[in-house]
Length: 142
Image (cartoon, one colour):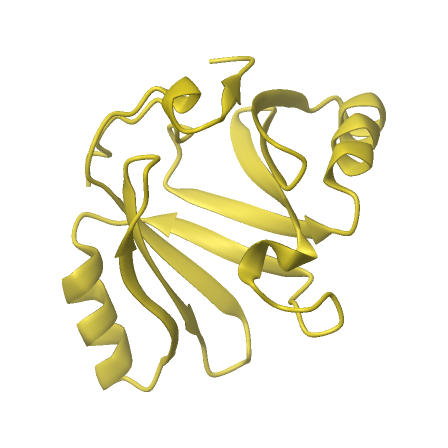
């Protein structure tokens, strides 16, 4: 699979998403302690970080629309070519669909599912190359 380019997404196929109560404090700590670099700041609720030759996302517990006590501590974001076909296939094998495919202003179409072990996965299809500034993101590092 060749990933479509979108300035609003890191150029990686799999991104861990780590949930924190205070995203800004977590970003500061992760950059200082582990040498991560902030790539994209998205308000107070989300950030993309680069580390080594990889990337990950830091998000607030409420970023998944759940109260902090119910939100998972982590999830996985996977970029795919066709979100709708992927969801159909996953559902056929018993994945519990938590959020149906939705188009977002940052140029991605995404759905979220829970696997048999209770882990949360978001699958994302690039539908446009979008400058983060157009939807409120601040690109800090490419």
